[in-house]
Image 1 (tube, helix red, strand yellow):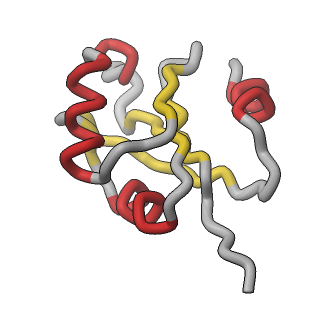
Image 2: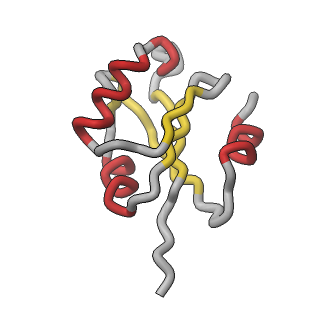
Length: 95
């Protein structure tokens, strides 16, 4: 049985005037560690969105259940391509 789950999750703010890039990286990290656990990587994209990477099915499920990140309402979208890389996802999301 293959253990497939979304490794990459894109976080987008609900309100366009509340960019995640304005939040402190320390606040984001602390919030994610408290609510999900330690992730492989958290990257801010040029678009102002966040790209989260995990290698745990449990962490992936916890992330997708979030509705806010450090007080900012967000929408989380799983990147469902099985062999996606950070570079491929970043290129797709650039404005």
